[in-house]
Image 1 (cartoon, helix red, strand yellow):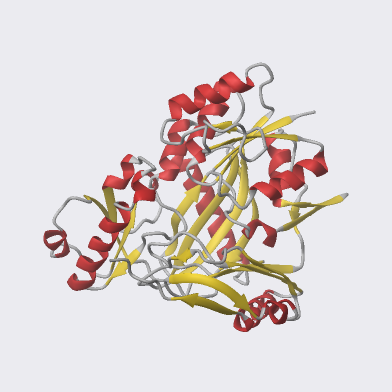
Image 2: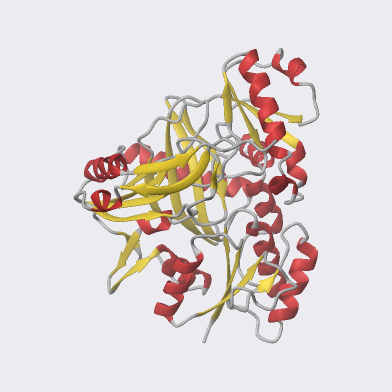
Length: 419
């Protein structure tokens, strides 16, 4: 039985989907995740305990555990595992991205520099220390600008500022975010720096694909029909196939491929975010990992003899199978990441049955747990849940997602201040 190593955080939604795909293929999964190494297999999955802030020790733990039977493939789930996965690929002589490319893909400043050096469109950008005086910086930038941490994903910490007052507020807000205990616990050196970029107007898209020896196979381009103009950039709806022209879709694919080459990504899953206007396609993010959360359930693939999930296709690719015969299904599909409307204590939701009864809705999954604290963006890093739709057209999918979301009524109590 072939074995694939999955490197992930303990909170990854996608792990179960990989498990189901592995069962279909008859592949054994081995997990490496950041869990307590003092407890005896607390999740009963025989995972290798690692620490993403100590990659040298984590690499030794993985190599020692798997040396008697090396993995046949490795997949990183999430942003933080990407660089460790690259080092594991190198240690076992498996095809994958180099450590340098993985590091660059995770650092917004390094990726901007590489994209600019390759002649690709990038916004004007400037790194500043989190300890710098924001009042002095605010007087020297051209508004509007976007402030963002270097190593956070999912739009966490991304804030637009249109004037000096908004800049000062955003800077201080990010300084407080990067000082939060959960962020400090990451021991990420990149958190000492902020990136200031000129705001790029336009429409946003996401591309999901896979690289094989430097060649990009695009699986899907998602339209993001909701405007993302700030002050925060919370993503909601993804719909595929794209309703844009073939010419624009071809531009997106070619720009993503050029961006991957510029950063040095060559092999494995690829997820990219871009913004498009009359000046061209601007890459906002290009990551050597699959789409996050449960969003992969919005993708379904077909080949001449079978259907498959994204996770199954990625497992096949990790095992060096040819996946070029797999393409996204012809029907339209989409997902809505349910945004957190306000800070507070989550108590529950009403209207789930009504939401599921909306035509073309295939599932409504609430991931928020009762009595937990909810924090919206830009400080937050999660959603209330996910809504999935499947229909003949992308417009029908979008309409179904909006209609289902309108049926949900979330009970969120105000926090009680502790004195």
